[in-house]
Image (tube, rainbow, N blue to C red; front, side):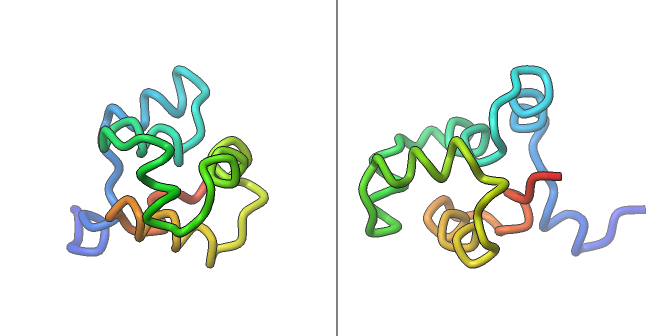
Length: 84
């Protein structure tokens, strides 16, 4: 049975497929799912596109506080970006 908490951190099938089947990071999979450009996310975070690209390509090295900033810029919960 799914609780309200489970629903709020659910991940769409498209995001899961891009992450697992195509090897994309969760950050990139979410960004593409939300039809956002790297520039849009970077601008909302107040950083350069180059800095965001580094974060998007290497999310396992990011601190939770950075994941929270990325999630806020995308309008999702930071737990949805956690790589296993």
